[in-house]
Length: 493
Image (cartoon, rainbow, N blue to C red; front, side, top):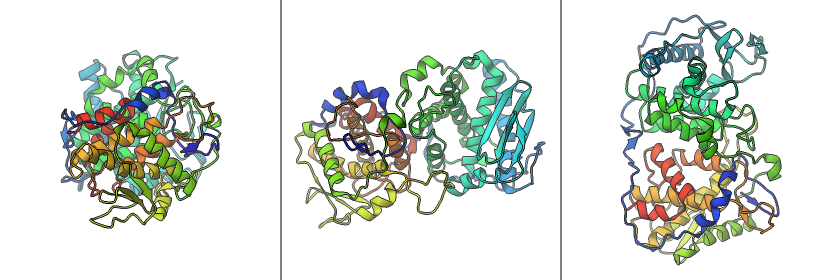
C-alpha cells in the first residue's frame, strides 16, 4: 500500500476507475444476520464440477503432433508447444464453422527460437533477447512464435506445462480475431486492450474444451490444475501503471482473470462480442500510471508505523459493524488457545490477529525485475501480505454477526470482506494529504495473485481450509470489491 503523504507504493495494479464509487462502498455495514444463499457454487468452476481427481498436463502416451516448425530442436519445450498448436487447430477447426460460418485456416508460419541464441527475423522484428510468445498477422505475415530457451521452461517450472498451453491458446486467439475481423468486433482502430481481453477469453474457451476431456494431448482438472492456470496470468499481466488506453496494453491480472473466466463459462461468441464499449466500462487502470502514483518502493510489513496505519484502515473500513475490533499483534501468529494459522491467525478468545513478521516479509518481497518465473525466494508484493492480515481481521466481523467461522461460506465471506476492504482503500481524492494507507499501483494484482496461492488465507476459514475452487475465490473477492461489504454477509449464509 502507500501512505498518501509518504508516497510509498505496493507495486502493480491500480483501481482508478472505481474511485468515484468508493464513498458508498466504504459506508456499507456488515451488521445483521446472514440471510440469502450465495449464488457462488464452491463445487463448480464455470459449469464443471471442481475436482482434483483427474491429472493435469500432457496425456501419457499421446503421439506427438507432426507440424512444420521453423527452428525446432525437438526439445521437450518444442514438443509441448507443437502439441498445443495441434490441439488448438482441432478446437478452432470445429468452432469457427459451427459458430461463425467460417473455415479456420491454419497458421502459415510456426517458429521456435531461443531468445539467448541466434536471432530470427519474424514480422520484421528480431527475436534477440525477446522472452515471449506472440502472433503477428497482416502484410503477408501469419505467424506464431515462442521462446523455447527462457519463456517456456520458466513457465513450466513455475506453473506446469499447462501454462505454456494457455499462453499459446492466447496467441491463437489473436489469429482467430484476425480471421474473423468484424465478426470478432475487430477493425483497424480496435484498441489493443480489446484484442487482449478477447484473446484471454478465447484462451478460456479452449481450456474449457481441454477440461472436458476433448484434447488429444492435454488434460486439465478443475481443482488445482485450473487454479494454477488462473495464477499464470499474474506473471503475464501488464507492468505497473500501464494505462489500459496505452497501445500494447493487455490489462492487469484482475481484468485478465475475468476475461479468461468469461471464456471458460461461455462459447467463443461471448468473446467475439467483447467490444470497446463493454471493456472500457469495466477495465481497471484506464488512466492511472506509475508516474502519477510517484511510487517509492515497497512498504515493509514489519514496520510498526505501517502496521499501525493498517490497523487504522481496517478499523475504519468496518467501523459501522459495531464489533469489538481485533488488534494486530506481532506474536509469531500464535493463539493462546486453540489452533493457529500462518502467516496470520485470528484468535477469537483473545480477539487478536496474530502475525508472523518473517513469514509476511517473504510474501511481501516482490519478484525481481526480469527474474525467471519460479525463482527461489520470490514473493508477490506487500499488498499480498496485508491482504493475508485483512483476511484474518475479517473473522472478527464474521464472529460479531454469529456466522460460522469453520466452513466454506466462511472462506467466501473472508474473500468478499477482504475485497471490500481493498476497495475501501482506494483514494477518493489523490490530491488530498490524509496520512492514510491507500491502494497503490499494482496492489489489486497482488491480492489476486495471493488469493490463488495454494496456501493463501484470503479465501479460507478460521482453520486455514481454503475454498477449493479458484473461480469461486475470485468471484467472492470481486463481489466485495465491486459491491462493498454488505453482500459479503448477506449472500454467504
